[in-house]
Image (cartoon, rainbow, N blue to C red; front, side):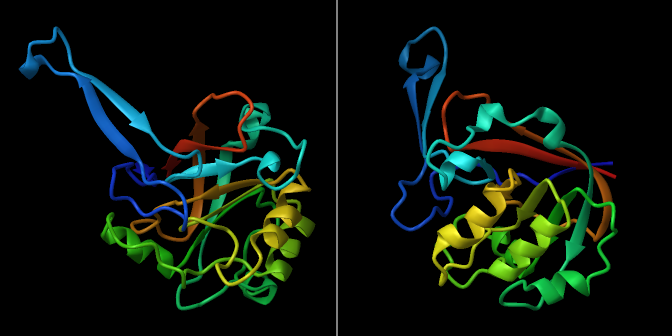
Length: 209
């Protein structure tokens, strides 16, 4: 069974405050007499479901195209932590995450927001506290994903959690939709667009049970 946990990109998709929304338009239309239909897409690299590379918060850090594919594909564990406003180290310690977990996706109440793909940006989303990020780093996890647009709480300085993770070369996947996903073991396929020299990029993310 395959599960697509990617949020579809469209012009009304919520984006981080201050970012431009995605623009999609046709530059050629058969209905207008052109020989084919041609669509155009303009958006920021942190739109929708995307990955963060070290360069996002570390000047001179690695770019998305320098992340090894093996770090983006393989066994992963989904942990369900609904009913919380933030994820702390104690929450992760108590969640019975298997010791051999190298790729971790965190399901929270955020996923309910994706039932409306055009909802206004929601500031009170659930994300990691700095001690939770330290826990992820200390456990040797190589990829961590969350079901809204940032791994860091909106009220916190964003660089703190991001730098803890990115300095350890941990891939951050943001904007997942885990609505229909139960906790447990899966195989992850996180395939970002191959674009050179960028700090983040949209990705198609699939889970296989």
